[in-house]
Length: 74
Image (cartoon, rainbow, N blue to C red):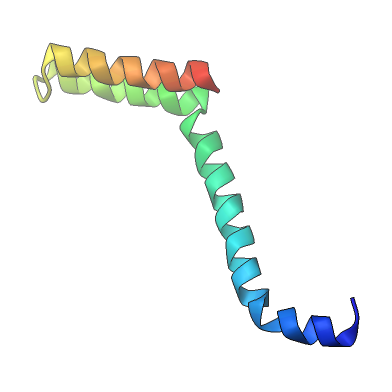
């Protein structure tokens, strides 16, 4: 790039950096969301809530199915 074009795009540098950070955070969040250990802990938490009657059996089964399907999609 020549000097003029660099000066033109220079004000956009913070925006590009912010977008790069956002992409990294999104990737990390997706990896964490599909992490088998995290899904297992989530299912354990759902089962605890179900056994203490904090949530219904139907809601617990739906949440467990959501967690398992997230694991399968990864």
